[in-house]
Amino acid sequence: MNSETALARLVAKDEIRDLVLLYSRAIDRKDIDLLRDLYTEDATDSHGDSFDGSQKDYCDFIERSFPYMNYSGHHACNHLIQVDAEAGTACGEVYALAYHLIPDGQGGQLEDLMAVRYIDNYRRCNDGRWRFAKRVVTYDMKIRRPLAGPAVEWSEPNLDPSYGELAMQLFQRGVRS
Image (tube, rainbow, N blue to C red):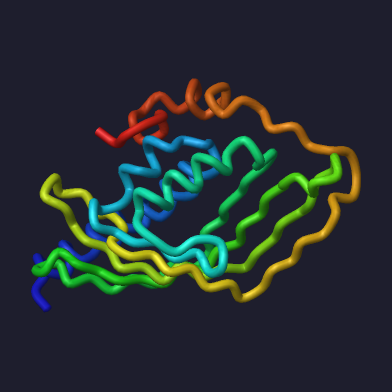
């Protein structure tokens, strides 16, 4: 492999890693416009027994769930990526921990902890950005139990300090520019 090809693959991998981290940020900061920007038009998303369908329907599903998530934290751990820079495609596997606080239906909250793997296909779009073309989530572990301690109230996502302290565009709400 020549140095130009190697450099192109490294740059693509870095951009794809940003894509995966932006997915976490979009969900955890309840930024539906950002989430919608992370998928190709024809993408699909399969989240085990909770959702299987088009990216548009997935984003609508997530948007409807936002009012019920008092806390959401997605933490990407390992991320293995293979890139075909010439074809503008890549695939990857992301190990992640996802932790949510959700209503228990009886006035309390449940802790929802999952060890997941995102099995992804990525595509470089005409605007030069990498996006999810297909995302399949597999659950290696799920724990759902009553929250021990007082209920947690979700702070207003728009007031998150990162929006004020991190002035660069990458950290702002909405579609990537």
